[in-house]
Length: 414
Image 1: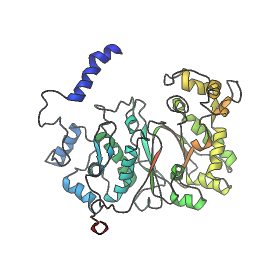
Image 2: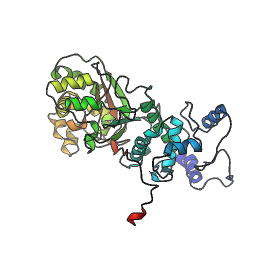
Image 3: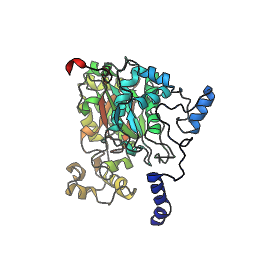
Image 4: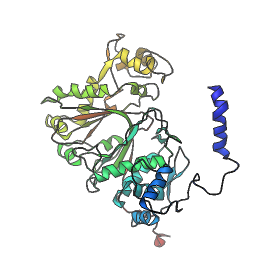
């Protein structure tokens, strides 16, 4: 490692800091300014240029002409050069203009801008940890929308909710990948070092009407928002497991199968319970409306479901210890769960005995098991997803649907 660092990495660091001596004033390798015309020609020539420069996700894009970008922002009240933050990985400014450029490329419409601004604010929030978006395990972000206006904005919450096809869900999900690529620099040439990677995810909207009907609070309330707030929530997900054809007519009958789905999607991710992240494993279980209604009809609140899942989503202590120690080098030591409890790192539920075959939970408390409601309302299916802990931590921002006042000069108040 020392030899490689001295022979290769040091030169790359110096090059990154000072650049080459013979840097030209212009050329294809330089980063264009916001209003530069980078290519003119036919649609095929434009597509070819963007592909050659690595500015696309491999799919055709809508050419982001100055006229198109200006029309996208027209009437929003936003100052195009307003900065929401700085990209932690690339040092580029997160401007309203750059949001709009990538939105046009992705096929978004101007009504989506408030959602995109909220998502950009999440990326700018240091708690989210966007700089980890290119880590080797290759988790990809899932965006979940809550609020009474999601449907009016065109976002779908029914069957196929996590599949491409619905314009708002698909185009806004694509915007995220393009923005991470073009502004944050998460390409294989720059900061994306994913071993395999995950496919880009579409945006998932929760079923607001179902939640209202059964009296359950939306996911966004877990992060301090009111149930009627329009909110975008984001976290990076490692993997997912379909829990298909859940069979049973009572909560007690179906909870074990749902808990098993959560267990099957949790593996090395448990290093985020202790190791890579301390108490930062917070998986998501997406219930179809049919399953959510079954719980509600039996008088179960979402908290009741979380407590039942916490009691059932358990694995043997030896397996847990293997995931956080013996089978991975992501944890500094191989201390037993009983030692970790004794040292105050984990709650007592992880050391109720010394038996290696005792069952221990996959999270530290019921509240760490998040629940959302979406999908086909006629199917008894669920979807369990494991999050990547602090490498894209659960972060939520309010979607402000009121036109901005950045460009309004309020002389009367001065």
